[in-house]
Each structure stands twice: as structure tokens, then as C-alpha cells.
Length: 201
Image (cartoon, rainbow, N blue to C red; front, side):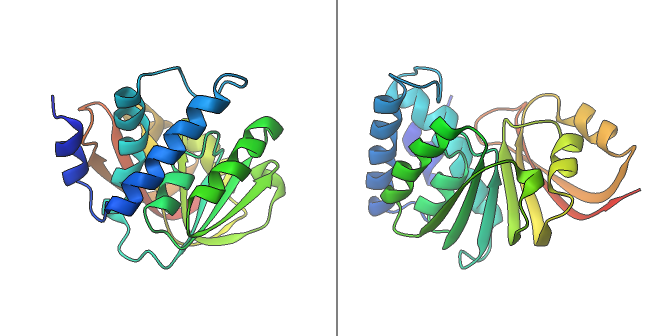
């Protein structure tokens, strides 16, 4: 099993300033977890590896940080807040839960880049962006249904678990799209799915 330093080495553009901001984020999560259920109450190492490093690895598939990313069902800000801290210039976090949105307002202050929080349902929001991200929100078909009306200039980068193949097969019944499957640096069963040219059949 790789240690934290090895994992961070595999992710590009993790500066000392970024690591300091991530520590502030972890502290904020720890404080808010006492009152609302953001994440399971892990140790610091587990939080860093299981959640933060998992999100940071998306940066390996983003060539230009001067873009707008929309994080659907952002929850605790994963991956949206983490991507902003890592250098993405503009991130919009869409979260329907008002308590989690209140957390995101504070978490956004940690990043030196622009973060907008929308407390609402993605189906009711009109927005354009370069990339859509999501983690632990819904299966592929449901995500596609949620964001069908958005203008997405580049692609989707979605963090998925062991059932990603089942989700792909299910989604292909109603959607046509190109996809690339990247291995996660954390787990053999976890993947990053890059989706392009999405069209409803």
C-alpha cells in the first residue's frame, strides 16, 4: 500500500501552499462533522487518502487550470473545493442540502480561486462550463439526466467505484458517448471516467 507522500507525488501541481490549504479544509470538515454528517469520522490520514487524494488525482486529467468546473452534488466539496484549492480558476458547487451549502460557503474561503455555491437542484439551474465533475452522487444515467440541459464545452470527469462497468452498460441504453477509463491511484476497483460527446439516443 502506498503512503501519503507517494500518492501526493503521483499528483501534479501539489505545492506547499496547496497542502496548507488542504490541512485547513480537513480541520473545517472535522469541526462541521460534529454537527452535520459531511463525511464518516475518519482519522486525518484516512480523510486525506480516501477523500482528498481521490479528488486531487482528477488534476492529472485537466490540461488547463484556467477553466470553469461545475461540481454536481458537491456535498462536502468533493471534488469541487479540492480542485479549486489545487488551482482550478473557477468552480461552481451545486448542492441541494442547505446545511451542506452553508459548510461550502466557509470551505470556499480556504481557496484563493473563485468558488460559487448554488443551493439548489442541478435540474433547475442553467449554467455553462468546461468540465462537469461528480463524486458519490448517482449512477451515470442519472447524472446524464441531471445535466442534460447544461452547456458543457469539454468533458465530464467522474469518480466511480466498483460498479462502473454496470453503470456504463446501463447508460448506453439511452445515451451515446465516448469514454475513457482511467485507473485510480488509490484502488484497483475505483476509476475516473472521462466522458465526451454525450447525446441522448
